[in-house]
Image (cartoon, rainbow, N blue to C red):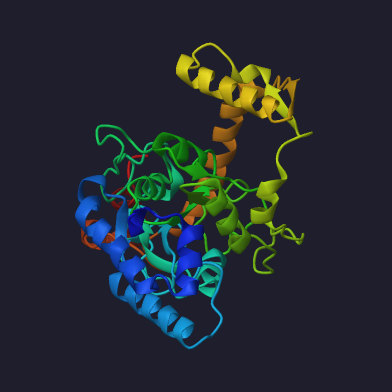
Length: 361
């Protein structure tokens, strides 16, 4: 029999709604799993035990009373620490935001709560999304549960790691330049960066605003579709949010791939590609072809310039977005700076705060 912490989200929802499982038992099993296994992984920065259990018990009472519940009723969800959660510390993986308690929920978090998901905690990450290994966290390295000697990828390494360790059924990641997709690959889970504008960015702490995108991280594709169906949709509080209908992602999974055209970028099979990775990709392409998809070679001649262009654009945006962390409004402030140079106390406080609060990356 599958243990509660290992069950897929879609199965948990079905059983909880029928009364075959209680949301409380599922959440307790997840919290027990975190307590027993997360120590060496360091996937969670904050675990919200009391509120998670309170939410689960309330869901069970509503089900017992015959009241309707949401599409994620009772499912334990982990949220990347770049996403604001009302009343729950949100640090973006940086000491400069240590102790920051947002006064509001990000839209994606509000939609999770409206769907009756249970938020169990906030996950580790590279500071402000800057990193691809989760070694740049201000709160310690996160490790890959498949092999503790390995990194989980980044910057959403904590979300990928807790999923792989069965310490949550679903997770939210945030992707600027691979920060969902790469750690999902490292940890053997499913990660999707949605089309820009598909999911609201309101309440997401910015790294590079024209790149950042929240997306689902799960242990299987059906759960990914289920979670995206909750997250997606227009939000008037995000000026980049797309006002387009949200498909029924779960039902569309049954459509198959017959007739689908898949572009295969020629430049991606370049020197230095790991042979095992290439083999896996080509086997996947062959499987798609056998299922009726059509493969089309696609030239992307500007690929060689992509990384350079990316680092010009995102660092410029990061410089603007991170300017707000100055020790004045919220977050960390260097306490001794005024005593050092009282004649230039404001500039000194800025410099000391940012030097001490931000990590090297």
